[in-house]
Image 1 (cartoon, rainbow, N blue to C red):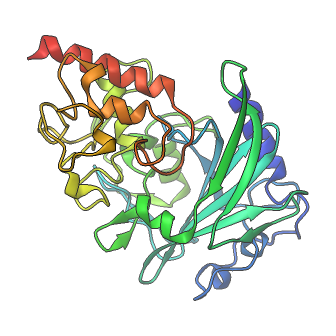
Image 2 (image 1 turned 180 degrees about the horizontal axis):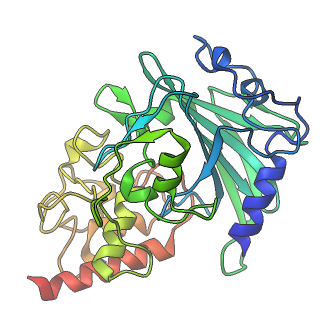
Length: 338
């Protein structure tokens, strides 16, 4: 219920007091410099609803960000289309924008991040909302906010919320020398989304996605939260960790690759020694000690909130207990799989 209510609140707050939007402005979107304010792009109407061509979407398994509610939208220029890619982010045309707002029920929107497909690649721009939610301002240096909220069990939380600066955006979104999106892959989108229809079918019908295979079961699937233990853990690691821990990612030199398509047990950390010992490894020998989660570096780092130990190192200050338990269950099951 919290997520549904917050999502509706997020739509209302998204530029509710800004100037009337005539529609996304491609001149602003493709300008060499980011706009000073979010409203300048024209993504939302006065009442906060997205303008025509800006479409809400969500992911099958969300990335954990200190219990923040996410509000995702996609824009593809009229007459253009993204090209379907089976196991990677779709190939979006120049002028496409991925919009992601972060909010809490107690505060409304805190920040909105834009990924804009420019002629020379993707650019990441963070925008921070003012206290009155009249508009959000471009903040390349990031921002700090104290958030008073509750966790899903109703316990009070005080969060030291950090809006990432532009360099930190690159940490998670970098692949080789390029910035790339994380979420819009077939395996994350192939379900009924916020518009009440299958998202890949909807995007195709709208004309901004081409090449989706029509054969039954041709689109790669990913486990939902109610899947088996291995599937739940691999799905969690894929969306929360694999954007860094994959070939070409910012943590690729660790040798720990957690992408959903990875099949090598060693690259998944099973029986693998860390590439560098230190506080992050604690007193443990293996990244994943089959059957023994309490002796696995992966669990040790996920279950920590200490800077320099905690993983992921950006985007959270709290421990995602559900994620930790999912990975623990997977590691316990590995004992019987040996």
